[in-house]
Amino acid sequence: MLSVANHSVAIVLAIIFLAPLVFIGLTALMTRQQALSTRLWPHPFNWANFRDVFHIFPLWRYGLNSLLYAGLSTVGVVVSSVPVAYALSRLRWRGREAALVVVLATLMLPAQVTVVPLYVIFSKLHWIGSLKPLIVPAFFGDAFSIFLLRQFFLTIPNELSDAARVDGAGEFQIMMRVVVPLAKAGIAAVALFQFLFAWNDFFNPLVFSGSNPKSLTLAVGLAQLVESEQVHLGVLWNIEMAASVLFMLPVILLFFLAQRVFIEGVTLTGVKG
Amino acid sequence: MTTAVGRPATDARPLPRKSRRRWRRRGVVLAFMSPWVIGFAVFYLFPMLATLYYSFTSYDSFSSPHWIGFTNYRFMFTKDPQFWEALRNTIWMILVLVPLQVVFAIGCATVLNRVKRGVGVYRTIFFLPTMVPVVAAVLGFVFLLNPNGPIDHVAGLLHLPQPVWFQDPKWSKPGLVLLGLWSVGNTMIIFLAALLDVPRQLYEAADIEGANAWQRFRYVTLPLISPVIFFAVVTGVIYGFQYFTEGYIAAGGQGSLGNPQGSLLFYPVWLYEQGFTAFHLGYASAMSWMLFLATLLCTLILIRTSRRWVHYQGALR
Image (cartoon, rainbow over all chains, first blue to last red):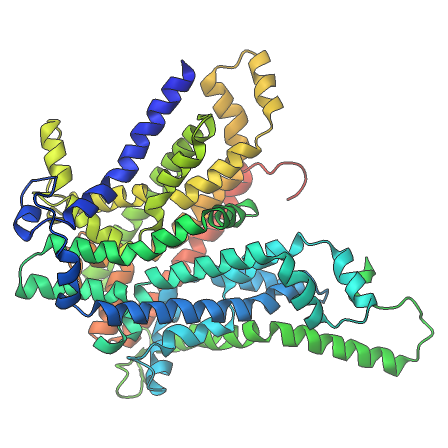
């Protein structure tokens, strides 16, 4: 009895969670007129939306920019955060705990607090309107990733590093040969989170792209499509939804491919909270 | 204990060598920490101080900043009605969304924890909306809740109220609350892990004492998941102060920030408008320092009060 009740609640919730995605997907397949009506099911299925969306705005270019931002910033965050997390978990030194507190404190700092001087710096470097303001800072460590990697590194037994030390290995070698291979799950989680963060990020690309159409990411490009559409064409729900579907598809695929890494990573962020 | 440093136990070594080794040791630590040390200085410390300086100046990024004392702050508190409106909207969002998200996340996690078969499938479905990029999710909800849209249609069939959501200042923020609940997955997963950690024996003991379902939840589950509630509230409040993208997109973008009628003018949206469309960088800096102080104050208050209601198992903390 109880199990039936639990399942019915779970099914109702599942429908509530899925319904918006289903409606978005169906609308992406409607003609413009259908999308403006109260109709719920496309008739006929207008697959041409997924072709037209490429004509209406430069989806390839925006997609490439999003991929560059997400891909390169992920490389940067992993390469720079691993050694920092190593020093904060596997080296002993005075001031280590204090340094960790400072790292964690930057986590609660709103992006809006530092954005004005960064904008000034980047505009003096003539970086506004390029992807550099989004990518370069990623190579100087990311507080959230450092914290998450530290949690992973702490679970690796010290005996392994000590054995390598006895064999005369330096700290860099120990990090690369002992710790990194054993923390693959953690590194994968950090890489996934950063990739997603960058793919979804709206505030930073909005401020730093300087409305240069060549360096817009999908998130900002999509927002601009909606704005210009209101001015010039009137609302095109079907095209908007088709573009949204194409925008979310890569990350949803990524989620299905790496669901375990994901769920474990999310869980770990909360455990030591 | 000292083995981690890798120092041999022989104390007979001459002092210079020992201190040279200690310096090398510090060099190693510094080398490993260097990305973050540089990053902290360039991307956090310097900008924080520069913002503080700019906040006392009039600055438009084209000419150099010139000192005007507390004028920006005085203007903010006495002559800028939009500052107060933006602050009110942001506080409204935090006070409504954060508690609802926590309750809804605990609810979903409890359902997942009770379902015996098919947990994996349900968990995937509940978590899926969290994967949708914010911009796409907001555009989706603006469409779903439009007066001819699917939700309106379904609500009509069920004889439920049919507000015009993002065109009505009374319903625009509730519309975003729905979106916030839809993408609650991260919090839900953390609660699920916490629920799975509650020792079975405690429930058995409660059953022997004759506790009903509510008492079991109130006196066993709730205290044991309180650290996670605390975590969810703190991160929710910090994120709430930065709530930007949803308000920006749902209002219709750059040209119509805050629409309808200022109801979606959140604090960071007004800061963005001041800083990056009007280029009042001095004023935006003053706003950003107030944002920082507000976040800091709320976090400290939460940490202070947490001692009264957060129970850490054992003597860990």
